[in-house]
Image (cartoon, rainbow, N blue to C red; front, side):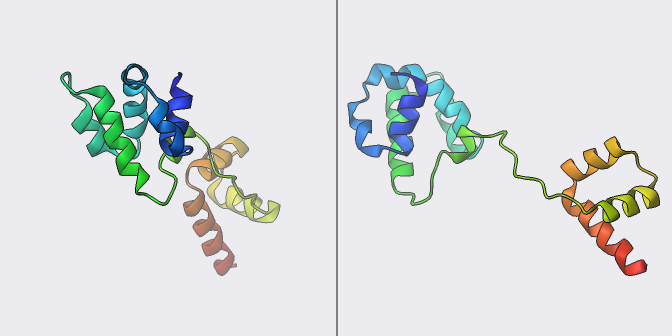
Length: 129
């Protein structure tokens, strides 16, 4: 069994978890623990010890997330998935670029990384007009 199968059994198809062997749990423990550190750092650090029984640690993760009603593994499956970026109206874009003396690439960078701040600045500039 590979990592994806075990993760699906732990977090989505929970009825399949009882079919996973201890060896499979031990083999995939490191990857699952690493992925879970993105959302549950304290738990991950607790289990990140040389003498941890890896199969039992995965069982504890399973029992913890079994009680949760929301999907538990969403941050680990797609950590780099970005939300859709809204388009800025051309007039607003040009107004801010002219006011701040930005190039297209600079504006794109700012909007991609600081979308809320750019939208706030555009709103302020519209009020000043």
